[in-house]
Image (cartoon, rainbow, N blue to C red; front, top):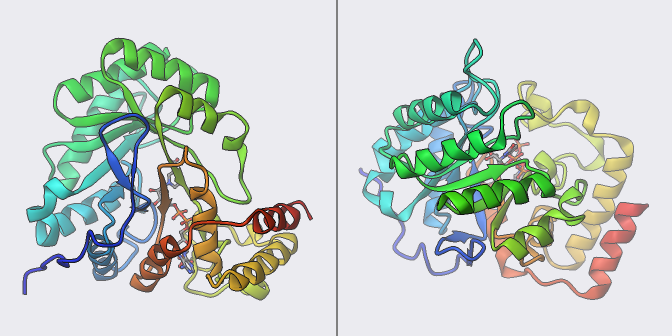
Length: 331
Ligand code: NDP
C-alpha cells in the first residue's frame, strides 16, 4: 500500500520562524547523520522518517558525507522520497552540506567554489532532487577566502540548486562576516547550524545573541549529546544497540565517563520531577532560548521520534528548575 501521510500531521507540531526570514521550521527536526547509512537497516530508517513526517517534522537534514559510507544517507533519503514522500515534496525542507572530506584530491574537501558546487550537484543526484531547500557550508575553511565560499553559496542559490543558504560550525565573528558577505551578494544567510546541548554551551557566549541581532535563524545539532542526555547510558551501561555500543558511531565509549553519568542521573531525576523523560527535558532546554529555531535530533527508532516530539508538550522551565540544572552541570 502506498504511504499516505497522517491527516493530522500539522495539528500539534510547533513551527518557529527562522530568524527574520519567511521560512518556518519545526521546533524539532530530524538529522540523518547516523542510522541511515548502508550499515543500517533501510526499512527502520524509512519507518523513522515516515513517523517523523506524520508527527509534523517537515525538516530533514543531510550532508554529503553522512553514512557510512559517505553519501549513503543521501541515497537512503532518495529511496524514501521515491517510495513515500515524493507527493509531499512541497511540504518538506531538505538540507545538505559540503565542507568535510568527501572525495580524494584537492577538490573534495573544505570550501572552494569548485568543491561546493560539484558536491551540491552530487548530493542532488544521490537524493534524486532538483533542488535542496537549504545548502550549507559545513565548516569554515581557513585557507579559502570567505568571499569565495559565500560566493559559491550565492551561486548555488541563484542557479536553482538550493532555495536558501546556510553556514555550519562558524564561530560568532566569522559568522557575522559570512552573513554580511551573503547579504551584500543579495542571498541572505538564513540559518546557522552549531552544536548545542547541556554539556556543550559555546553558543551561549556570543553566537546566539549575534544571530538574533542579525536576524539569522539557528538550528542546533546534537541536542541530546548523541544520546548521552537520554536514559541510554544510565548507570554507566553501554547497550549493544546504542551509538556508543555499535562501534561505527561518532560517540566513543570513552565519552561515557563516570562524571557525565553522575550528572545524567541527577538530570534524569529532575526530568522525572517535571513529568518528562531526560531526552524531552534536554530538547526543551535548548529550545528555551528564542534564538534557537529548531532542535536537530537524531533517532535510531520510531519510539525515539515519538518520545522526543512529545517534549513539545512541556517546554517551559521554572527559575528553580533552570537553577537546578546549572547546579548539576557545574557540580
Ligand atoms: P542527538 O544528540 O539528538 O543524538 C541522537 C541519538 O540519541 C539517537 O541516534 C539515539 O542514539 C539517541 N536518542 C535519541 N532520542 C532518544 C530517546 N528518546 N531515548 C534514548 N535515546 C535517544 O543528535 P545527533 O548526534 O544524532 O545529531 C543530530 C543531527 O545533527 C545529525 O543527524 C545531523 O543532521 C546534525 N549534525 C550536524 C553536524 C554539523 O557539523 N553540522 C554535526 C553532527 C550532527 P542510539 O543509537 O543510541 O539509539
